Every structure is written in structure tokens, then in C-alpha cells.
Image 1: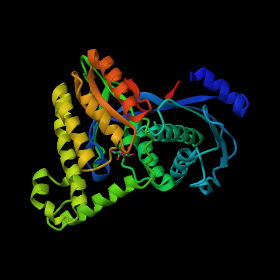
Image 2 (image 1 turned 30 degrees about the vertical axis):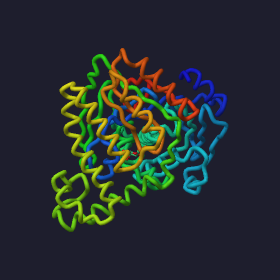
Image 3 (image 1 turned 90 degrees about the vertical axis):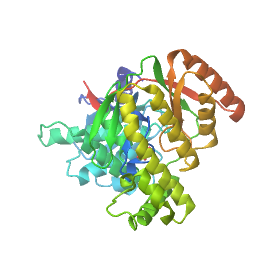
Image 4 (image 1 turned 60 degrees about the vertical axis):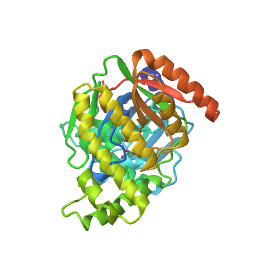
Length: 395
Ligand code: GLA
């Protein structure tokens, strides 16, 4: 929805009291490589999308918070002092409330406000629609809080990412890593964010894709992060780490374990399933330096091979794919001009990401689309993606 249209919808919904309408936006992300390693301290390489959450906001003089989405018939109305009671009870609006609570906990003097949301990131598609909502909300509420307190410093977007992640942990109950919120907050147009999830040091790597583009395929199988599988994987990683710590001194997290150390000591992890989970993390971390170097050298061939390796590891060792994702990957790989293709995000549904030569994109979309529909009886969606900027106020 255009901003002008959103503004009239805002006034229709919340009334016109002459107060200023402000606009904030924050994007979804695609992760190019480095999957299921952020919570093990590894490096990741997401890129911010141009699909985003746009938020129209107006301050209030009281402590009431009202939330509405352009495409939903739900209006959430609560107050700053009672909103914690809504935990687990909302159909929509919980990311916003979770973020507001974390900002208050961090000392921000959050005030009442009316907020209208418009999302272009598909929900449940593994493209971090939730991080887009969280980071845009955090930026808006922190900006208003600082203005109220007369503080004139710029909002620290890394802090916004961290508070958004906390909201997921504490209010939503998903023990996610920092990748999604960081990418949404710190993304840069035409660049990937190469992020070390232990130190939060990051680098914007130019995406010189030359004669190719990033193509996403949405299987339209909704992944449900909360449904325990994600937290289960985290638990398995913890278990593997505990076992490895008994034989490799000094390791703090799985990202510290080298491929050689894993190969030498893997048998200390008794459960073969846990061993495979750890294998994925160790090898995926190993792929990351190579991936960054390949992208910096504009070597899409090598980068694509690393993407393929990542998917195979997620399919067979980490087991977070699903038949639909594996099918798209297998079909995509048959097409000449596809450098690499893999699932992206948490998995169990959602999207694949591929780097496809311009002159092969039509073939990719048509061939994979047709085969997919024949096989599964429902359509896949394709997005030829541009890489956009991170969270910001739009003036
Ligand atoms: C989800 C989480 C991220 C990350 C990915 C998997 O998107 O929010 O923190 O763990 O899954 O790489």
C-alpha cells in the first residue's frame, strides 16, 4: 500500500486530531548462506530485502497503545502498564507488544501511540516478516521515547536488533539467533551483511551479481517456528557442545570447533542424530569464510557451490528442510544458469534462494513452477529480488 493511502487509512481508523504522522520502515531478509549457525556463534550472510514492514505512527498523550494492520480486521488496544498480560493471547500484535516491553525494560520511556502496519514480506515464508515488524516498531518507539526525554542522539540500530531478539525470546518464546533482526536493522542496498554472531562485528559485502539475480521460490508451505523444532535443534547443539567440551579444551560454542577437531573427536557425541546436527554446524561455519571470499572476488561459481553444499547439509544432517524445499532445489539445479540454490531461513517450509543468470530466470520460473504445481497440487511463488536498506524513518 502506498504511504498516502496508509495515511488516510490511519486517519479513518484512529481519527484525526491534528497530530503528526511519522513513517518508519524495516525490511525482511534473505539469508544467502550460514544457516542455523547464528545461535552457535557462527558467521552468517543475510541481505535485506525491499519487501518490508511500513509503519505509520502518531504519539499519544496517555499510555494507550493501539495497533492495526492494513490487511487485518483486528484492532489491538492496550496500555503500557497492562500489555504484559497479553502474552500468548494475541492473534496478531504480539511482536509489537514484546518489543515495547523490552524497550521499557532497557530503560526507554515508551509512551502511548497509535500504529498502523503494512507488510509486503510474505508471512511464514522464512523471510523474517517478524523481524521486519519488530525492528520497525523498536525504531519507532525508541525514537518517540528519546524525543519525549529530550535526548538527541541517533538510535543505535544494533541495540534495536538485540531488543527485538529479546522480544522473540521472552514474549514469543522462540529462542532465535540474532541474524534476522540484525539484517533487518543493519542491511544496506546491494550489499550482503557478513556478520560474526559472537562479536557482532559486521561487514557490508557488495553483491556484484553481474549478469544474474537472486531468485526466491516460496513453497507456500508455512513454517511454524514456534512449533518447537527450532528450539529442539538448539537443544541438540547444546548437547553436542557439552560432549565436545570434555575433549576439546577452551571451546565456548560450536562455532569454535574446527572441521579437523570435529572429525577427530566426533565419536564423543554418542547420539548419532546429535552428531549429525553438530556436523552441519561445524561444516557450515567452515563454508562461511570461503563464501565471504568468493563473494568479494565476485566468484559466483564457487559461491553457488557453497550454497549447494549448505542445502545438502541442512537436508541430510540438520534435517530442517521438507519435501517441497528439496524438490525446488533438485529441479532448480537441473537448469543451466543456476549458480547455486538452497533453502533459506529456519526451514520446514518457506523459501529457497538461488542465484540465477538473467537469461535463465524465465526458464527457472516456468520449469520449476510447472513441475512444482504438478507434484504438489499447489503453486509456488517466485520473487526476483532486489537488496534494500535496513530499518529507517522515512521523511
Ligand atoms: C530463524 C532464526 C534465525 C536463524 C535462522 C536459521 O530465521 O530467527 O536466528 O537461526 O532461523 O539460520
